[in-house]
Length: 110
Image 1 (tube, rainbow, N blue to C red):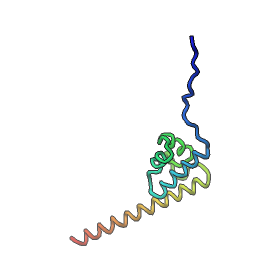
Image 2: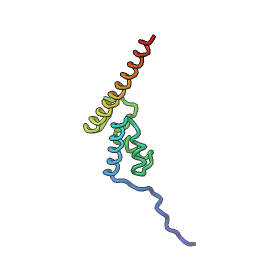
Image 3: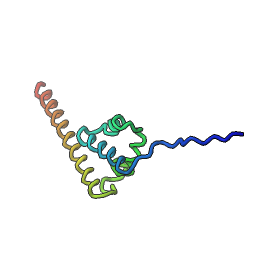
Image 4: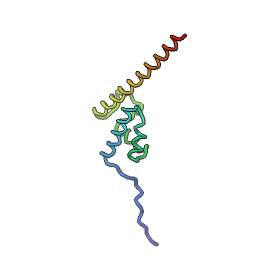
């Protein structure tokens, strides 16, 4: 009976620095565009979105249904989250302004 050496079937292992680079990239894309960071990072770094999702959850970059007041993590992460939320609010307010202008224009034409 011959014995074969078992092939190492483990996936690639990433350093903490590599993981942080990907998480930072996701946060950067999300803060500038509002969403799509995970998909962009998946394509850029050739990493599964599922893997990236796990890293985001561990880094407190993804809300887990908790209130924003209870989001854990370092002050830097909390500040980044505040900045992301501020950007999202600003985008929504701009969108609301456009809708109000359309509403008033249509209302004025009646």
